[in-house]
Structures are given as structure tokens and as C-alpha cells.
Length: 290
Length: 279
Picture 1 (spheres, rainbow over the protein chains, first blue to last red):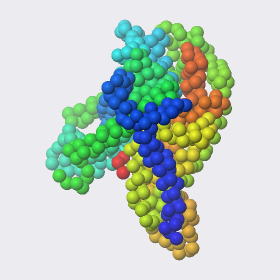
Picture 2: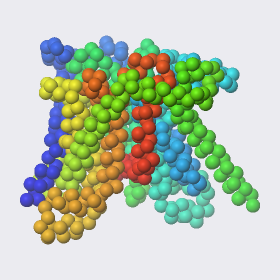
Picture 3: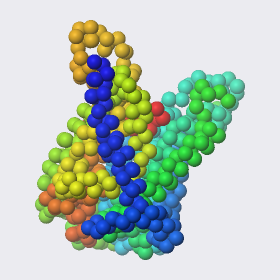
């Protein structure tokens, strides 16, 4: 009786896993071994797609580089800013909820509207940024229209969304048990010692989890490249998913796109494994005792 | 004396940084709003002005009628209705089954379902697309709705399972004594007691669907069927330099979400915290 109910209730989720997760993952691996082009024949080519990717396809390495560049720029910057703001807000400031709302609000802006707004902010002739720079006598920039500035511009744009991590960190900080601070005080420790021996160790699991999830997220940016730059100028913002999208849906090369997807999958898997393995050196879990 | 003096100074310093940061955060919003009310003539004045003179309400009425934004809104809400319902119902059922009911292979299945968290959507994208294509479901809402009825996402299942596990089992057992079946236990006991989590899932699914761009972009080709996000992006293609229009349309897409936030702020903060703090 209980058994049947249990299976029935879990059925949609289990079916969904096979139908929309495991099935497609396996299928995309098979696709990746073919030269399948929508409307054309499907021929088995072994690891030909992968070989092409790593030896001939300059756009593949470019898109990988651009995506990692974006990730490595926006993750540390965003999390550092979020952590500092959360620390400041945790100092029993007045108007906490007002500050929290203001810092969180940008996160609410849907990414397409966000892209539209920043496109306009970065407008070289009449945008806010160049107007401000010119106002104080500095030269403006071409921002996303400039090959070297394009990715840094998008990194800067991503920091507008620090609010999400900030709210998480703030909740984490508020959850640090007060008796730990008191213990440091009894030992005559000051603010710096409290931060180093209590705050930071208590926060490492939260920081760790969010850095992993954040990195996986930034490796999959798409909307900005689609709306703001079309991958340009000169492929400077050819983010990985954008390249994959173009291969699959503009050039209809499904086999090759599936191979691209699998490489990203393996990169994310390797990265996550790496971070998890290294975590024991720098993440402190309460009750672990070391 | 000096101690409290340095304290006061450091507090002033904290407020200064927080206020400066707040101004930086609000600047783009101010730019969005001011541009949305400006005529083309005023928007291209240098140095830029901050107050629209006069307020160009026409940007909104024009922008929202040139392309059928009302239609896009209805389309989006149709998808929302079916997707959110599916996610909440099936994730609650699965969460309940994994938390409370005993059946062979349960824990292994739970582990499998959770492993979906690690899969980038890119890796499932192409086969899923070809599946819908072979079913003739391209240019319908089915690909955007049906998956929501299959468990509603690993994370939501996980969240509800955790929530249900904190509710005393005595309550279920008392209900079973009175002849209840698992469905009534879920519906009458666990769901009402887990309302905060259910509301969080509802809100975040709503926002995720509202903001989804790649899904509609791939599956919808007919202009009539566009969602707000897709409609906004295509609007940009048509009115490339009409920044007044573009900012008015963007504001119209942002506004409902901001409104939702102010109505349900408590659940937002709770939700972000739930999703961000390691389980």
C-alpha cells in the first residue's frame, strides 16, 4: 500500500529524470559521435568532432577562453564585493532592510531587460558611463564595442547583481553563533581576530557552495551575448553557450554542437570535483574538529 | 573615550560606504526610468539631463502597442500558470515520497534525481529539442510546460523533502489512524505546514519562467506566440536606436517582478537564503 503510493508519487520525478535528463545526456553523447546536420544524414564519425574541436576549430578555443575569462573575472569580483557589503550590513546598521532591498533590486531585473539597459548605459555617444567620464574630463570608452573592453564591460555589468550572494552571506553571518565571538572576547581577541578565527571559518561552507554554483552559472552565460554583442566584436564575447547555440540552431550542425555540449559537461564535472576535493583544505564544517 | 571615538568614526565610515554603494546600485535604475520618459530629441542631448521635460508617456503607449506586448503578457502568463502548477504539484509529491514513504530503491532514485543538479542544461538541450521536434511540438508551449510536470526540478524536490522531514511523523500517523491515505496526508498536513517553502518555490519558478529566454527562443518561431522576454529582444531588433521606446518596454517587463518583490519580500529573502546556504 505505502509502497504503491510512494512509487506513484515519485513517478513523475523519476520519469522526468530519465526522459529529460539522463536520456538526453546519453543521446547527446551519441549525437556527438556523428556528423548529423538537421535535414541531412547521420553518419557515425567516431571522435571526429572532438578531434576537430581540439585541433582545427579556432572558435572553440576562443569561446572557451572568453568564457573562462568572464568566469574568472566576475566570480572573485562579485563574491568579494558581496562579502564586504554583507560584513558591513552585519555591523548592526540602522535601515538594514532598506539597504538590503536596494542592493538586491538589480537581481530582479530580467536578463533581457538588463542587457537592454546596459546596452544603453554603455552607448559610446549618449550612454551614462561615457557621459560621467567626459563630465570629469576623462576620455570615454567604446565598452562592449571594443574588442579588449568587451568582456571586462560584461564583468562590470555582472557585479550589478551582487545582491543575490550578498543576501546569502548576510544570512550566513547572522547565523554565526554569538558564543563563539564571546569566546574570542574572553581570550582578549579584537575585531580582526574574531573575523579571522570565527567569521571566516564559519562562512567557508556557504562561500564554497556559492562559488561552485556561481562558476557553473557563469560558464553558461548566453543572454548578454545574444542581445548585446552577438558574440562580437571579432568574437570577443563568443561565450561557449552562444557558440553552441549558433552551431546548433543557425548552422544546424547538431552533431558538432552535441560534442561541444559534452566538453562543457566534462569541464563542469572536473571543476566541481576539483573544488570538492580541494575543499577539505579550506572549508571548515562545524563538528568536524581539526 | 578614544575607544568610543574610533567606534563612532568607523560607524560613519560604514554608513558612507553603504550609502555610496546604494547610489551606485540605483544609478542604472534612474537611467532606465529617466530614459523611458524622454523624447528622442531630449535623450540625445549632451551632457545628459536627468529630468524628462515633458514626461513622454507616449513612449509607453507607443512601445507597448507597436508590437503586441499585451499578447506577449498573456502568452507568458499562460505558460506561467501551467508551469508553476506542474512544478509545485509534482515536486511536492516527489518530496513527500522521498521523505516519508518507503519503497524499494527509493534512496537510489533520490540520488539519481539529485544528480540532475550537476548537469548543465546545454548537454540536454539538443536531444530535448530533437525530441520535441519529432513530436511536432515546435512552436507550441508544450516544450516549455510539460517538463515542469515531471518532478519540477531536482532542487525543488530536495527543498521540499528537507522541509517535510522536519515535520513530526506523529501527525501523519494520527491521520492514518483516522483512515486517511497518503494523498490526504500530503494535502491536509504536510503542504499546509510547509507553506513558506511552497511559496518560495512558486515565486522562484514564476521568476525563472518570466526570465527564461533560451527556451522560448529555441521553441517558439511565431511572433504571436512570443513571451515577454523574447518579444522584448525582438523589439530591440526593430527599433535599434529608439532608446525611449526600448527603455519603456524594458521597464514594463521589469515592473511586475519588482512589484512581486515588494509584495512578497519576506519570501524572497527566505528563498534566497534557503537556496544559498549549504543544506
